[in-house]
Image (cartoon, rainbow, N blue to C red):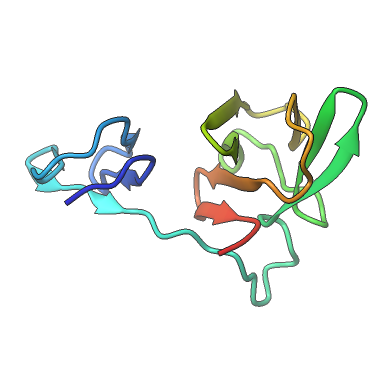
Length: 127
């Protein structure tokens, strides 16, 4: 059973989906079940490049990806950043060459934040 905002990935083609409406069925892509991505929040030996860091900004908050900036190269980059506060969900898409950060109109540096790395998967700032 899926849950709203769960993230799934196809290991065959790389498709990534985020659940907008939870259902009972199994997600399948390329003839195989999709894999539910688990949120990670501790980086053992990775140099702190994935855990979102939030700080106050003029219009809300700025999310920096990692205490050491994450690479934003063609083969290794952050695809998106999302911030959740109550019923509000804000998403910012990134691409190679962009700065590994995003600003959001949310006034809470404790907001639940997730990022998706094309190689290392789903990361969050808290459990």
